[in-house]
Image (cartoon, rainbow, N blue to C red):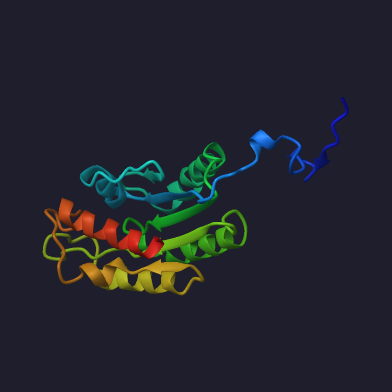
Length: 196
């Protein structure tokens, strides 16, 4: 039996015309969305303290991580998740980086803009603000510098999740930088309200 196939591109993608293999046709009524959250130790904390690892929520995060790690490792991990979990119709990608390298605001800004125009153009991309520190306990980062970084990120043409303003007057932290379980819950729930 001869099967006629059309090539979508020169890389070998094969398009099967509708109806050729009816059992493979997507008959779901609801579309499935996946969420990828990329971040640093604060994202690690959110994933550990608040049991939020759902079937459709994926974390790519590490302690002390920043721009270089994002470029060298995390972007490949995002691509791997998207290509592995093909049952998801739409991806929401939340970027929550910057606390460890606030001076890289322009690098982040340029990279996000490039991703929005290329690899992530079909995804819904969010930047979640770098959240405040308790300056009495954390001497390595200032809220003034965090606000400058957040301002640069909010200028990019992507959804901005402003958890900074939500937390600034009610931050709960033991070391001034990382949060309590209740604060991580507040961040996660606010983020999900924006995404949904």
